[in-house]
Figure (cartoon, rainbow, N blue to C red):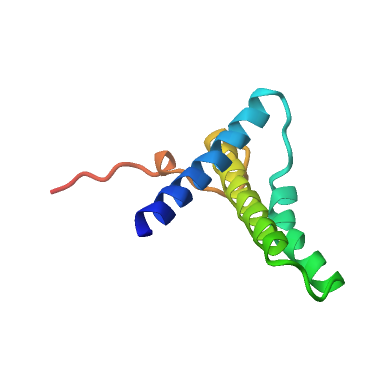
Amino acid sequence: MKIGIILFLIAFIIAGVKLVGFLQKKGVFINRWVFGFSAFLIVLIPVILFENLPTGVMNGLYILSGLFAIMFFETGRIMMEKNQVKGVIRASHFPKKNKK
């Protein structure tokens, strides 16, 4: 059971990463903050609007929320690699220290 959950989580993270890569390969560049806000709002809005949602619907919303959160962080990582994010200091900007 534990191994199944671990494998599911690994596949889930890889699916989010691959989905971002697929979208960018197709030329669809979505702002990372859209993913960030969607990760919370996709669960928050239905819970506020409806009192009793079926368990399956809530689980689906949680999975979609998690996918958006992974896509938010993956998009941020890609932007950091391309130096598109201001304020991030890379290790290459620091001079190398000589060890004595």
